[in-house]
Each structure stands twice: as structure tokens, then as C-alpha cells.
Length: 370
Figure (tube, rainbow, N blue to C red):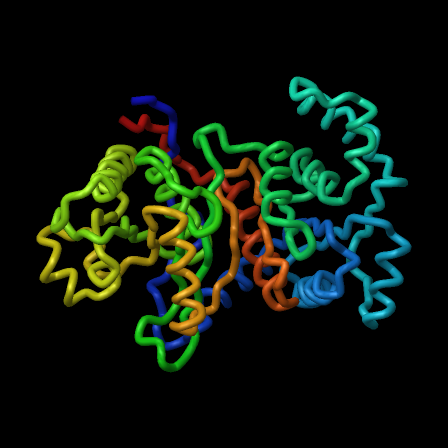
């Protein structure tokens, strides 16, 4: 089996808290509060869209991010005026006139020349706001980017991978949803991480292990809780025999080898993952004890169905799809998103950016996955 480095991350320097089940929006409120402590520069590449402008105005007024709007400056101003949106406090960057554009074109050419891109093509491509925004993030002119209200997920993810790149310790980019259980009828309240529900169709054991560790990191930075990971299956503790179960078991072994202190159960059915009484009956030596806050689905099919059931039938609020495994934060939006959805993704991206620059003292060296 291939070996590659995967990081052990120390707890972030801000305090983690136990899930407060009495306040249904506590998790997203904590994310917003955390973003406000040190606002990051978040670049938005679809700035003519009214929803983007509304979210940008709210993010600016609430102090959760320093917003950079990329695109045709005059058209952005016209769109803002039509929506009665004040752009004060935001930065407008027009690729057609920005002094950064020539250097960005050179950078893009250097990145993509081996794939056949010419300098002339790079000079044209860099004028596209999505490309320009990702180059801003790559080169440190922004801390993270948010796109997808207009662009497809395929365009957003491909551009992020090509320009921002994958973390050296990972082999793939995956996605997750932050699921908010916000309603009075929810017996389980707070935030959950669902992964992968948007990108990796049929992960092998190694890929599933990567998804689990990336999602655990996402839980630690966004939920501000110790991650408790459930590797979901139609089997619990070997109650069924099938290659699909074997994959989940193997992935769980890999995660345990890489992160021996991470609480993880697998293979485990959903009820045993989130209901303590069922976990006690079904799992003899459970580490999660029916209190999972990270649910890892064995395939995209299962994950996509699972998050939509939780959202449409269970009444959960789904924030995402959010990306993990990139060198710097770059998140996708649904083209059907609302201004509120965009605001929440800006807040998440800002907190991801904060986590990315934190270097806690005593951080442990990477370990190898067997």
C-alpha cells in the first residue's frame, strides 16, 4: 500500500466547548464570533450578483471579514446601486486594471505551462474573476475565497485545485457540510460535520481515511470541540460481511494508526453513532459512545442522500458544500444559495483561514499512514 504523510494537528489555541444543546444556533454563532476576533480578507469573485453583494455588506457591517470584490468595477458599482447597497469598507479589484494582473499572469503561466498553457492564454485567463480571486488567495493577497453562486461546482473546485493546490499531506480535496440542528423539535442540537457529500464519488480505504482526518480537522476548527468521528456503514462492529464494510473497517484502521488519540468508531450504523443508548448495546468498546459530531459516509451516493434527508426531512440547516484539503480556504456555494447562506460560508471561510495560520506551540510532526 502507498504511504504518504498525514498531519497530526494539535488543538487550536482558542478554547473548545462542550456542545450546548440548549442554544440551537450556538455552533454557527461561535463561528461568527470567532471570525469577528480577527477578520480575514475574503475575496468574492461573483460580485455583480445581488446575493453576493448583500452577503458582503452584512459581513462588512458585522465585522466578520474584510471583503474584496473582484470583477468589472463599474458593473459592480452599478449592481450595488441597483440594490441600494453601500460598498464602503469593501475593496474593489478589477483584473482589467489591477497592477497585480501582470504578475498573476506570470504565476498562472508557471503553474500551467506543463499542461500546455501559453503566456498569451494565461494573460487572458487571469482576467476572469474566478481565476484572479484564486491567485489572490494563492499569493497571499487574500486569506480565502468564496465562489459558486454563479459558477458550477466543477469550475470552482477545478480552479481551486489548479491554482491554490492541495495540501502536501493529502492526496485529494474533499467536501463537507456543516449541518445545523436548529429547531425546537431536534433532539440532537448543535453542529455536525457530514463528509464527503459533494465530491469524491467512491473513495477507497485510503481516500476515506483522508476524508475522515480532514473532516476531524474541520470539526476542531469550526465546531470548536474535540472531534468524535463515526465511520458510517450498514454494519456495526462487523455485524455484516461485505466488501463495502471491509473498506470502512480498513479506513478506520488507517485513521487510528495515524491519529491514535482521535475518538473514532467504525464500522458503525448511524443510530449507534448518534444515540448513546444504542451505542452501549451495539459497540463493546466504543470511543465515540453515541456522541459523534463527525459523520463520514462510505460513498458520495450515501453522503448526498444523507445530508439531503437531514435537510429536507429532518429540518437541518445545511451550510456548504465546503472544501477541505486545499492549501488555503476556497469554498463553493450552491447556485441556489441565499444571501444568508453566503454570509455563513464567508464566516466559515474566515475561521478556516484563521486555523490555517495558527501554529500552536508543541505541534506534533506528521506521521505515516500504514
